[in-house]
Image 1 (cartoon, rainbow over the protein chains, first blue to last red):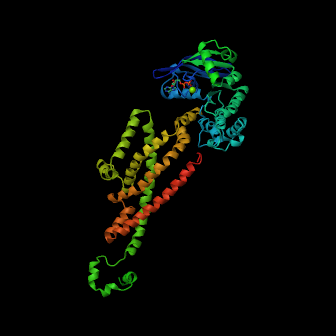
Image 2 (cartoon, chains in turn green, blue; image 1 turned 135 degrees about the vertical axis):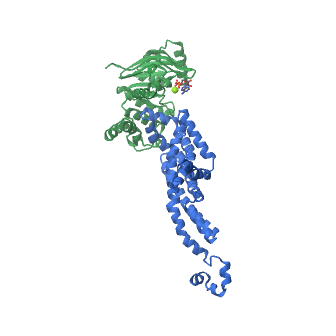
Length: 255
Length: 249
Ligand SMILES: Nc1ncnc2c1ncn2[C@@H]1O[C@H](COP(=O)(O)OP(=O)(O)O)[C@@H](O)[C@H]1O
Ligand SMILES: [Mg+2]
């Protein structure tokens, strides 16, 4: 199998008149972390949602591992939805506002997808879910409801829920933006852990110092295109493009 | 006659007063309590055999229909949501009694004739569906978008998302207004008396017409309704507590 986990080619997405993604191309090698930077409204969320097919791109090709979808030639109706589902199943999504299921316990939040959607054996899934909870430091919270947890704990459950699906890649959309500052560290630590364990991740974040440490590749998105890309030592430490420099100055001043 | 008189008037008034008193009291000196005692049972039978099953069946069927109508109303398919909207509008915009008459007397004209109880279930179910559909719709829409999306990312399809994620959360919002619908329905089944369905209220009417004890009999029928409503309200409280267990108090 190829070493490229994610391959995006000519991805376009507009909402009505608004062209949000105007031709995105990038690849992500297996087991690496890609950090997506960019000003607010530049299309970072739309790009992640396109990978998970929560938004359906207008055109372009997305390949994740062995599933590839050409959105320019997506059949209408059921067949198209089925293709989208297949691509979606390749990635796990961690939302900015965790979106845990409030009426399910922590453990049930993890097992719901694997048991109900993937139809895997309950015993096996339960065992794996407990291992995952242990990994994100919440083994003792298995039977709690989400409202009983702190924001940082909730987000760690959100991460574990995504991992429980055994996805090929994990997508993070500003996983710490909704958190109180003192809770950011525990979530970033978990994400860093995943990266070191060989998970392939794509992370949207404004935590530049974290990005420097964890990223193998940084993409700077602005105006619906990737303006600059490369290792953090280049894009963050010595950005070539003026727009990247301006963005980093602004973010680092406030950080 | 002598025994009754002894019991209620502590004397045999029928003999002392001669025939005059008997004539003026057409139905004789049967006391109010006696009449209540003898009609309590038929009324109870009307309650248990007609009023309660009619309410329960109509509510269950109406709720199921309401879910379908609400889903149609939310759906992106114009024709479907248009039909749902029209149905809701007609049900809410016409009197329940008229709807009952249409099912009882109108539909037989086009060959749709049901036995009385079935006809009543049809009419009341459709009525409940019209009202509950709006409740169910707004309850579904009150569930945050992120819940639908989280369900999608874990691989759930439409039906799974609805059944396992959305409806359990929507229930919390929907239970109080749906309880109102249920209480209204229980009381509205008394309209069945107009089409001669022998439910609780009809039984009290029959007894009242015979004895002229209107106040006592209707008050007693009211007591039956009231007791059931109180019990249902208690049930609602328990259900709400249960559904609120995963939310911060
Ligand atoms: N569903 C939508 N409908 C209309 N406009 C949208 C929708 N989603 C996003 N947008 C617009 O697309 C642009 C990019 O949004 P987003 O991808 O969320 O940017 P970012 O995550 O980088 O802040 C914004 O202008 C936003 O208002
Ligand atoms: Mg965003």
